[in-house]
Image (cartoon, rainbow, N blue to C red):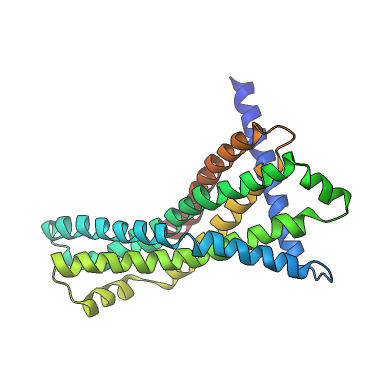
Length: 260
């Protein structure tokens, strides 16, 4: 049992080191000037942003709107019983802007775009396209990994802000209809409860989640060797690991920030 646990811990450290190396190399390729391939990398980044961000707007809008309505419905019915009806703005900040906005957006992108990246790169590996690029001296980090990571991070950040705005709108619709709270009072309650630390950590979380999801999915996609059966296996692992790592990162960011 001890040997099994120890091996799992070592495997987790090796996995984290491989992901960190992938992120560092992608960041280096982004910062390093290149005379060739700049237009191609920009094209892949733009395509990734459109697929991950713009194409995900309908599902993100639906989930955010319903989540905002659900949270305010629960808060609006329970808080007045405790004499805390004025804490609706704080509930929006704590539940949606701090936590559920970045986390649910990360889950949407991991399940939708992350699996697509892992499948695409896995098929490229099976079809020997990755090997061909390597033999031609084309750096995989610049033309495959870095553009996808940048696209996912940019889209994750923008979608998180959009998710929060739509969720707040959904919360206001319920607050106005059920609690008869005017728009000015609703926004004032949110801005009064929203601190600079909330804004900073809300911006930090999508950046960390986006980099983690993109690195994990690229890693598993490029881990496919020669069999087509490996593609769905690695895609499933990418999805599960993306969700797990996002939850761990959320814990590591939230606990020191709000319990210290």
